[in-house]
View: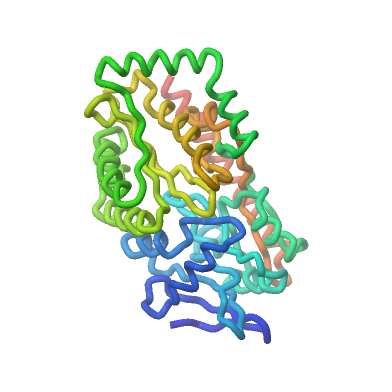
Length: 376
């Protein structure tokens, strides 16, 4: 079922239920395959698995398509949530499992199509937020240029990533040099006391098997003890297994592993899409923590990425300031929340949204500072 919104002679705007059998999954996948900036979390393989098992079922897929051909030009899942602490807004459906809010934008989508997406996204309430949007991308520029007087970027931050080619090689050399290089190799030699160390990368059907090993490794650690591992709840386990199974079928998953003999020491789950690599989940055996297994496998993943044909860029998806990944993946992806406001009170709503987001960030910073003081 689709609900038609105001359209033009050239474009039509529709909402789809992502889980409905009537939603044209082929057109959706084609848009994802050709998007200016890939977002593996907004394609049918990941999003349908997430909504089926975790929800909420109120999320709808907003699409702008050509009226004559039916070709999809823009698409993103939208839901209702608070912009900061209190102000409600519509938002592209980025979550803790998918911290990337970039809409899928076809290269042929012009300003008119982008504006129609933004306008339709504000209904109801007059505000549309695009969180965790990498700002130095073609998609971000298209969104801002389509309506420069109605867009505002809030909550800017930077997270770890790394580049390709000469840039990526230089970042690797900087991360794997001097005292760190010497120490990492010393730790690998010591890990050899438990069995010959080896790195393995799994794809396709092997990645599905490797993901099962990852799930149990994660559940055996601190995430299992705190109830935040994927296996801690039946619904998160079912969602993750289905998402990885679907993506692995098209080569969209890679599992990097570090072994010591017959013991799995660390595992890293990565999604690949359009030449980009997204580091999704990491786990390690805490009995081997002294050998820095997380850092070892993150550094190896960087090497593997650089050696992969067609590789363009890597996004760690990590929180800014992450102590393990930032010294290793030396590139930085600046992200922010793009807010589009519609209507006569659009400017006021943006100012309220800016204050709301700033208050939330201030309170979070204060809470983290208090936690650090109490832990000393």
